[in-house]
Image (cartoon, rainbow, N blue to C red; front, side, top):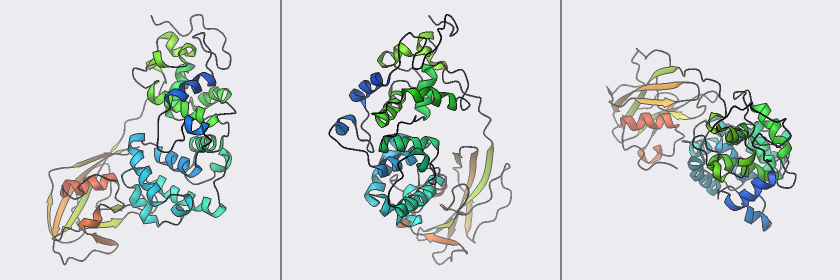
Length: 374
């Protein structure tokens, strides 16, 4: 039976919870040694015991890709990047357009621009910096990512806090403060647990615990190595944590997408500005995105234009975009307007098109891309 968290709650000690048990790094690492997820960028416990050490380049690349993205979505992109650019030197020498095109579909495209910039800075200095403080000075690397790379690749004993870790620690300590305000408290509670001898594996173990056992819904508490020290479990309130502040309503924006198609199948594209949302990516011409549906019909070139039956909805972090798609059939001799180009059918799938633009093109040309990338 669930009970109130304040009933008979003892004074807290580092690593101890109301459940009466002790939360220790050793218990978590023993669980990890048996149940570590085999991930393509990870050097698992058995390999580490054989003397293998994580490659900082692979750790960094995976952590950047995993920001706001799932493991399942990242894995094929990670393999593809390693095949084309096996080390930071080769990535630093790559053309921006090639990297952006390879990234297309992963979303949050500022990560790709920062990836290129960081690779070039690392190549200039000859190696990755080894501390979280120095890593945080590279483009695109914030507090979590710098700590993760420092702990996993360089064994710096720093707390690594991602969404999975926030959930685990919020439940262990029944943290009442809502996220994101509770981030600092969670980091402070985690820091004393980080072992000096296996900080990287501890970080990976805690992430795995959140991803596989301490899940958002119906956590498998019976299998958890920290069950006895979990305040939320002791109170029967596991799914009440972490507490999250209410999210504001996501505004809706509207726009027009003009998919011009030549008689030979080529599609008209242009480049977005280098800064800002989807910066540097390719797109079909279109209207500005605004709070009201666009009323002016201003196609990029003459042709037979018709509204397609399928509209496009795409959710960004801070707003939802709804695009009305219009297809224009043009002559094979139609010239591209300034700052635009025609992408032939066999090249379209390799353009640096974000997901929303692939949706728009697919709405007008259902077979434009064939098999999903990468």
